[in-house]
Image (cartoon, rainbow, N blue to C red; front, side, top):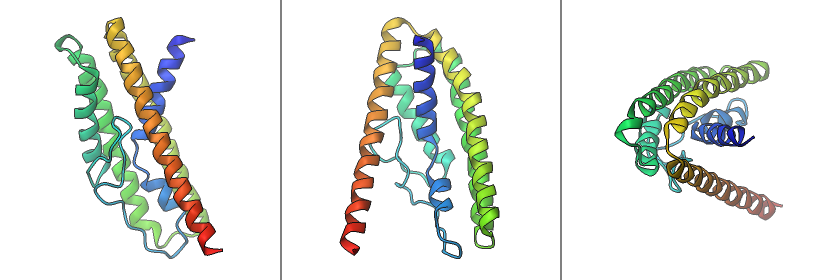
Length: 181
C-alpha cells in the first residue's frame, strides 16, 4: 500500500512534467492558428515557478537540474538518477516529436483526425509513465529513509503548488467568462 502511494506520487509528478501544449491544442477550434507555448508557459511540477524552455526537452533539462538538487542525490545514487534522467529525456524527445507532428498537421485536421491525434499523444504519455515509474522506483529504493521522506515532501509540495496554479487559472477563466455574460 505504501509503495503504491509512492509510485502514484511519482506517476503524478511525471504527468505534471509533460507540457500542456497537446491538451491546449486539442481544445482549439478547427481552423484556428495554434501556437506552441512560449518559454515560460509550462510550469514545473518540480518547482513552484515557471520553467523556461520552448520544447519539452528544454523544460525537462531544467526539471532534472532542479530535482537533482531538491532530492540531494548522492554519488552512490547517481547511477539510478542517471537512468531516471535518461528516461525523462527520452520521453521529452518523443513528446516533442508528437507535438511537432500534431502542430504541423493541425490546420488540415478534421474533427476525427484531431481526436485521433490527441489519442496518440495520450497513449504516448501512458507509455512514458510505464517507463518512468520503474526508473523512479529504482532511484527511490536506493535512498535512505530520511531522503525518501524528503522526496515525499518535495513531490507533495510540488503537486500542491501545481494544483494551486490550476485552481487560480480556472478561477481566472471563470471570472473572464462571467464578465462576458
